Image (cartoon, rainbow, N blue to C red; front, side):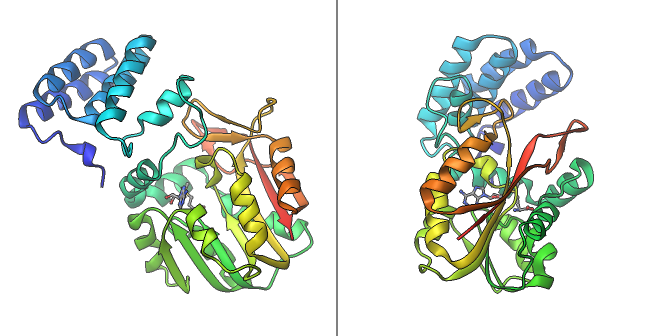
Length: 303
Ligand SMILES: C[S@@+](CC[C@H](N)C(=O)[O-])C[C@H]1O[C@@H](n2cnc3c(N)ncnc32)[C@H](O)[C@@H]1O
């Protein structure tokens, strides 16, 4: 769970709680002052510095925001709180790799209890259904014997694919998300691991289908993942995934919402470099944000 929840100092926690009330009430200036008072009491509290950075950004104090995020990163080198992604968004460090495994784990351990309600009910999430449709359109809709679900989360993909897949293995960083997936009793095996590390441990040609729904929004450069997917897939295998999209010249960017967005050309380039054939690539939104569809792509690559 997020270590950040408490500073470990009761006075600091109380001031911080007042600060968040001011922030919610639309007064970021008073909120920032109260967070600074909290940090006087608990100067080593990384999440407090991160919150001050966010308030500084809201107040248009770019320089102060950068300093406070750097302070948070210094105090929390694994970056559970997410200072690196914010520094990358401000152009201070490279975007690739700015989202650390520690941050993603903390984010989803925290989010797990309300993930499905929030994503499916409130944000009209349809990533798994998009993958099934795209596979159908690519000319191969199963059955699939050996399947990997990358970033499986609570198991929504396996629920959608169970009727056409025999043996599904899920991998995810977050223990709390994996616990929800385990309760569904669909996966043969679930593993808490980072996707890149996990793929490296899989045998060559050992898998018929790789799925990744709404996961590459936490990856910038996809070159290594595509190469590993190509190695792990058996001949004739498929690799289906969704991304958030952008039309700029870069293969990927870190969006303001702290999610990566990829371009068509980027996906095509990584596919060619990995020796995978493009079977399907289409515009498709996987979820909404404040009522509007978030631009995305759904892709199926073949080996
Ligand atoms: C938005 S959720 C999507 C979950 C699921 N695929 C679905 O469609 O419902 C993203 C999931 O990917 C996991 N994740 C993100 N980056 C990861 C990485 N590098 N390695 C393993 N899991 C990762 C997160 O922990 C989270 O559970």
